[in-house]
Amino acid sequence: MAMQFYASPEQVQRDRSEYARKGIARGRSAVVLTYEGGVLLVAENLTSLRKISELYDRIGFAAVGRYNEFESLRRAGVRMADLNGLAYDRRDVTGRALANAYTQTLGAIFSETQKPYEVEICVAQVGTSPEADELYRITYDGSVQDEPGFMAMGGSAEAISTVLKSRHDVAADLQTALALAVEGLASVGGENGTPRTLGASQLEVAVLDRSRKGRTFRRISGAALTTLLEGGKDEPEKEVGEAGDVAPPAPAEDKPTVSAASVDLEGKPEADPAKPADDTNGDGS
Amino acid sequence: MAAGFDPSGRLPDVFTNAGTSSFTQFLSQAAPELLPGRRPLPPGMAADIAPHGTTIVAIATAEGVVMAGDRRATMGNLIASRDIEKVHPADAYSLIGIAGTAGIGIELMRIFQVELEHYEKIEGAMLSLDGKANRLAAMVRGNLGAAMQGLAVVPLFAGFDLSPSDPSKVGRIFSFDVAGGLYEETGYDAIGSGSLFAKSALKKRYRPGVSTQDAIRLAVEALYDAADDDTATGGPDLTRKIYPVVMTATADSTHRLTEAEINAVAEQVVAGRMENPGG
Image (cartoon, rainbow over all chains, first blue to last red; front, side):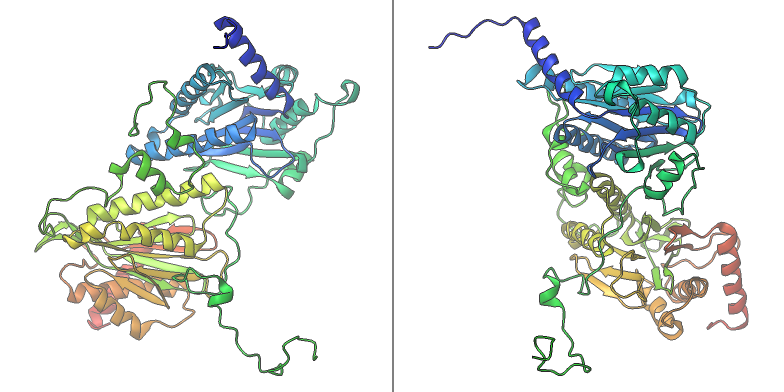
């Protein structure tokens, strides 16, 4: 029988922590901060895979680290929120309960499995005033912190936090808050310590809008984001219902809803009277 | 939390796995007792133990759909409720109305609303209108056992199609049967005990491409006709100011007519019937 080398629990924990921290530090960062009109969530993200998402009416989610790991946590959060909202009432779903479930889950994963999750997440809940906003930072080992109005996660979170700390103002408007968040994200990762320039295509931006009723989560992207980054006002775009941020469904195919067959089977190609019936190649051959 | 408790304190696997984007499928694993149709029922007929919701009408318009429901729920020969609300938004672009056993209908509607929102949040995209209708059909089918014991519920589903195959058909209506059969209706449809009379009224008055304003009037007229001939359907209650719930779904979103808006329409309809009771 092979002898196992003894490793002290402290050593095991340290190794796991170091592994998780390294994984998180490799990724791009995200910033969450409160402003006058709600909570602003900004992530540096070049892909269409989301780092920021809606959990419930007044609760948002932001994460950095490994995508597959925080995506499974995000799903769990949406499921837990929707289950509790249905079983009790929509008002009874709170950011704190979700943060608690996340710390328990990440804590258990950290201490029980070989590989800890390489993620850091934020659960943000918008309140009636900036003072009532709640930001919870939950780290890979399950520890949780209640952050004072702003937080940075991922890559060089400390440096970004320094930028945010000096200038964060709860009375700022969206434009100012976004400028600060982007300045923070851009302050790291440049060559020789020079700040970078981040455009709309490199950012994923969403707000929990304090003034909205019901689902407060709203993504800001495309032209609206460019305008906002250039210092323009946030145009509250045409309200598309209460749905907030979802993409519309794909174009419809002309076949009966009750049929599960594909449209090429179900569609009845009609003979076009303008075309000769035998023109099968479409080029007269 | 309804799901089994994990001694480690972490959320059970059913919460974190990638399996499904459907809330009902998730419920069936995490909290099956919250799904109607999963509960064992004692044998025998149970049709008379709970209130029944009655008539709902839906009309496709040039801009989307209009759905209206009367406010009555009955238990046998008694009126169980005179201000029940049986028409609700399913999501930002679609409406659901329920007829049949009120309790199960409301539960079905609540789960369906969460189902649509849940999919949006998990996938970041909205279901197609056909997808929503198919999902609702599956949920109705799940209630078949209870339906056979008298606790039947049949919804009416209608919505604004964000990506229609024919741009002139943005408003679409789907009806169901207790076995989960799904039928797309053309122009208008009605469900519930007074539906026969409501549909007859609509058959004579409905014209394709009707405006939303006119369709609202049509819907209230149809409910009036249903109430005229069906004891289980409530007409406009002028003494208590209880009028039908009328909702629209258009490109903007779903909208429930305000008290003032519906008062005006209902009073016009009643005034018209004062002169000509047959409408």
